[in-house]
Structure formats: C-alpha cells, structure tokens
Length: 536
Image (cartoon, rainbow, N blue to C red):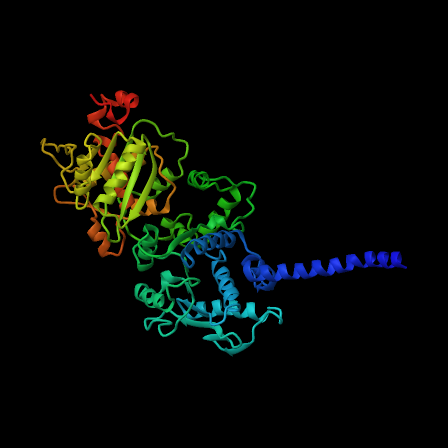
C-alpha cells in the first residue's frame, strides 16, 4: 500500500510541477508585460496598418532602433528628452503613442499630453490611443472616466491624456504632465515660445519624458535652430535622425530594363542602398515632381530635410557627407591638433585631431575655465605627442596659450588669431595689385578645409560635425575678399556656435592647409625618433 501510495505520489508529481511551471510562466509573462514595451505592444496593442485592417503592433526596424536609443538615454539620465527628425510614415508617432499608453495605464497620477500642429493631426494621434484602449483585453484595460475629443481619463488610477493643438494661443500651459508627445513640431506656430511653455508643464524630474518628432521644413526656421542646438549640446535634448532607408518597406521591385543613373549610383554607394531602394526613390521623386520635396519628406541626411531653402552654405553639405563616408584613408604623418576654446557659457571647447588627410576625432567639453582647458591640452601634448597644437587666441584662448607656454610647451603650441590677417598673399589683379582672397584667418582656414574636402578626405561620421561645417554662409566685400558669417550673426538667427568646425579649421593653419607645419619640417624625422623634446 505504501509503495502504491509512493507510486501514486510519483504519478501526481508531474501535475504539481506543471502547476508550478504555469504559475511561474504567468508571473514571468506579467513581468514582461509590465517592463518590456516591445513585448507588451505585440501582445496587447492593435494598430491599423497602411493596407487596412487591424493587426498586433509588432515593432518595425525603425521603431526598434528608436526604442533602443530612448531606453539608453533613460537608463543613463533617468528621464527622456529626445527630438526625432524622421522620414514620413516610419511609425515614430505610433511608437510614441504606444510607449506613453504603456506608462499611462500603469502609473497612478500619470498625465500624458499630446500636442500636434493642427486639429486633424491631434485627432489622429488621439485615435491611435483610443484604438489601443478599445482593443485591450478587458482584464488589462483600466476603467474609463471622462472621454471626449480633448481628454481620456482612467478613473481608478487618476491617470489619462490631454490633447491640444499648437496654436498661437499656446497649448497645455495650465497643466502638469509627466509625458509630452510633441508631433510635427517643425510646422508649429511660434515653436520657440510654444516649446518653452510646454517644457514648463513637464517637471525636470526622474521618469518624465518629452519626445518631439517631426519631418523637416525650412533651413534656418525655429525647428532647425532647435535641432542644431540639440546636436551641439546646447539644450537638454538628444538629436535622433531616422533616414528613409531605415524602413525596409521603402523599396520596389525593379523592371527588367532598370539601370541606375550616375547620381543614383553615387547615392547607393554612399549609403549602401540596393537597386530596389533606389527604384522606389526614383518613383517617389516622379510622384513628387521635385527631388527637393522628396528629400524634405524622405531625407537621407538631416541636411536634406532642410534643403528647401535659399541658404547658401560656404562648405557644401555633399562634400562633408562624402568625407564622413570615406573610410579607406589611413591616417599618416604628424599629428596636428586644433583647439577652439570657449568659456563657461553655451559654447563648447572643441578639440580636433588631424593626421594627413584624416580628422581622426573631435571632442567637446562645456563650462571649462582657462586653467581647465590648458590642463586638457597639456595632457593631450603629453599623451598624444602632437607636432603642433594650434589655438585660437581670441578671447579665452590667449590665456590658454600663455599658460601652456609658461608650462614649457612653447615649442608645440601655436597661437592663431581668427580675426587676424591671412598669412597667404592675396591673388593679384591684372594691374598687379592684391585683389580678393580671404578677409581674415578664419576665412583663410575654412577655405583650406573646403579645398581639402573637395579632394579625398576623411571626417568622423558625425551629424553634429556636419551641421557645424555647413551652418555658416558667406559673402564678398567691396574689395572682393571672402567674408564668412560671424558667430555673433549666427547667434542672431538662432544658430549655435560652429565650435567643431572651427576646431577642424585650426588643423589647417599652414599654407594651402598643409598637414606639416613649416617650422618643423626639417625636424620632423628627428621628432619621430626623439619625441617632443628632440628639437635641436
């Protein structure tokens, strides 16, 4: 009997084990639903796809990429502040709606604000949320209180949504929200004022989130200024760009007679695109009737999103992009370092490293005083052993230069005055008199950069560097001299200082941008053998 009981017990054990396993599996499932947005979306949310119908919300590659970027920022800072420049219909709005719905139904007292540029857009975003809510399993769906075109309240947990439009009267000024979804911000009226007011509605506290997402509009408009400041680190937002070719559905089967044009082949090589993607692009441009309108709505780079304008950059965007994508040039020769110092204001101290036809890297730091910048440069001299460090001595830079000379680095550091006269002689006119040329050293150095980029040159693959190098315009004075837009004039139109670009330019202080300083050519071989102290 005992053995039979024992046997009976053994036979029942798998049933108990199955029950425990099911209980554990249910607990794990509940945990994933609460903590894994992608899993929650696929299991609980329904969306209406482009082809119609109703399907589970499974992240596409663009949404998965954006989610990883946002979660990394949240893990590092405890909050989310992101501005997304996107191509059309990549699913960014749907992702943001799902992210905030997931938070709003699970956190008591959590208020999400949705603000778009016009009523139909706000209504569409709100309908996304309502569709999520209407099709949630009843057991998981919180009880609804107020529900109308402007709000959705979850009465049991005192959470919900407010919906408004970015009009001239402003939006959401009287509310306090924990999450803000700002959609198509490039098309808002008085964006600068609107965002300033809305930022006050979301406290600067852990677990608060602001996602600003939009396609581009005009170069130099308020959103472009906001975007550039995010790239430059002059506001609290992380700039995220999502090109059209990140979306795997943006492709089309090619006809038998398809052949790429020279321009299409260059584009394909630059971005790693295949024939079906290029053919889709060609068909879209034909539908739009103008390549610039296609680029604004389906940009391959941030610059393209803002190209429908008359802004004339001194350094063209295409040659900067080509240098960013050039990866087969090996750094060679002496190291030249360019230092563009800044004080404790909004600008950053930027330092660039150049060897031959390569800018190897650029680093930026904010809020450094003279001694801190000098200490940073001294460490670079000791560790990296550059043959020359060129420092802009306007403003804070003169103190940095003097301190480094005092410390014994006079052989290595070189003072460059952006406002000073060019060192290369101006070209002569027909009568033999000087005519044209750059107005000052800054124009001269940036001309050297432009000339280098028109050949084969390699830059770091950086959106902030691209923006800095292409953000200033130019003109010619009555004597035919090249005049670059000043930092002060850039600030007047809302643009950040081109710190990274100026650091790069300082690596081109020699005639014709030579990577080998004239003063050390004869000692170069000695330096390679004996190091920084090997000068006779």
